[in-house]
Amino acid sequence: MVSIEIKKISDSLKMVRIGVINYFKVSDSILFDAGTSCTARKLIESGEAGEIEAVIVSHAHFDHITGIKELKKLEIEFFLHRDAEKILSKEKVVEIWNKEDDEFCRKSGLSHSSDLYIRPQPESRLKEVAETKNFEIIEIPGHSPDSIALFHPEERYILVADSLGFPLSDGNLPMYFYSFREYIRSIEKIKSLEPVKLCLGHDGVVTDISYCDTAIQSALKLKEEIENGLDEGEIFRKVYRESLTLYPLETLKGVVKLLIKRSLEK
Ligand SMILES: [Zn+2]
Figure 1: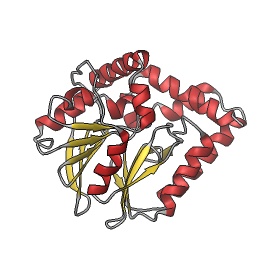
Figure 2 (figure 1 turned 45 degrees about the vertical axis):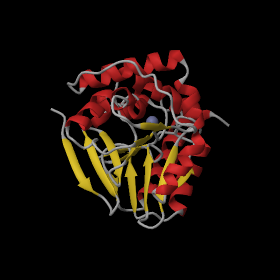
Figure 3 (figure 1 turned 90 degrees about the vertical axis):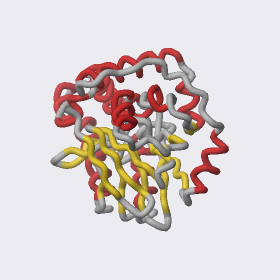
Figure 4 (figure 1 turned 135 degrees about the vertical axis):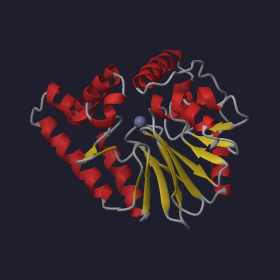
């Protein structure tokens, strides 16, 4: 059984958490992140997708983008970072995403769907759409090269997706998959905006800005451990736990390899 939690976060913001995937709805009309195909279907079935006009994808990872397969059945415009758009055009990548989506949905006890093809709106219009809701688009590479956050200066919340790592009951799993340095820099950037609500991509919202420091500290710690020779098996045990066990094994093995690579990079 996949749980659904619907929660008002701020005047203009609502969270619809479906299992491990967080969807954020801005003024009911903009959806931040597409999630996976099965969670997107749940979102539609829950009646929460009815007024959505546009979907802004935070970054091109399967658990944030494959929901497009279901959402595109509605009359919705899609917005992606220019680099995400490039990634989406690669057949091989889409094939891997479909496999990951398939396995994630199977492990969640839900069925997936195929065919990810969409024609995203030009990125120039993303700014326009974000501005109609008083958002600032913040580029935060580090987790992935195409990661974006949406910051609402009046209500002081920020939608950060995976840029602060993955929340675990005893802290945080760092996710510097693209660049360690950029990951830390991105978190510093988020922190400097002084948001009062950090809306994460998974497992809810954090209202304590010190979570940014937690994310930085856990990244520094893991990097140091890896530099000191922490082996793959031990890293895997840090990664493969709690709701992360819902992810495909191959994806998590890839995560371990990336963390090692980025930790040892100059
Ligand atoms: Zn991600």
